[in-house]
Image 1 (cartoon, one colour):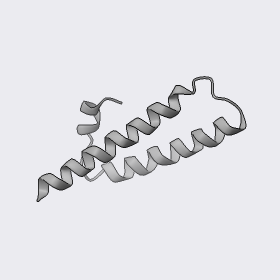
Image 2 (image 1 turned 135 degrees about the horizontal axis):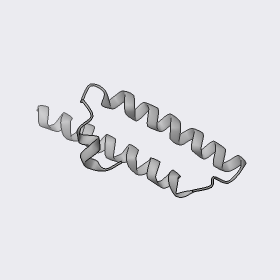
Image 3 (image 1 turned 120 degrees about the horizontal axis):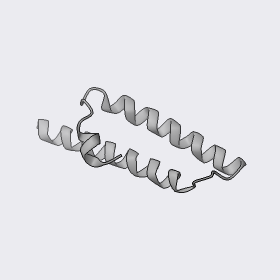
Amino acid sequence: MKIAEVRQIPVNELPERIKEEKAKYQKMLLDHSISPLANPAQIKDARRTIAKMMTVMRENELNKQ
């Protein structure tokens, strides 16, 4: 997910989406530890998506002040 797409997510929906992405990431790690994923780069992409969402959430917090 690109940063422009993340910025279009409504502010009140962002924490819920982060929670969902983290759960998906944890499941992906568990699945990968049991049997290798077809595309292990998905793990890196999921981690980066979470980081982008958290960055946008923090930017929104700082802009409120």
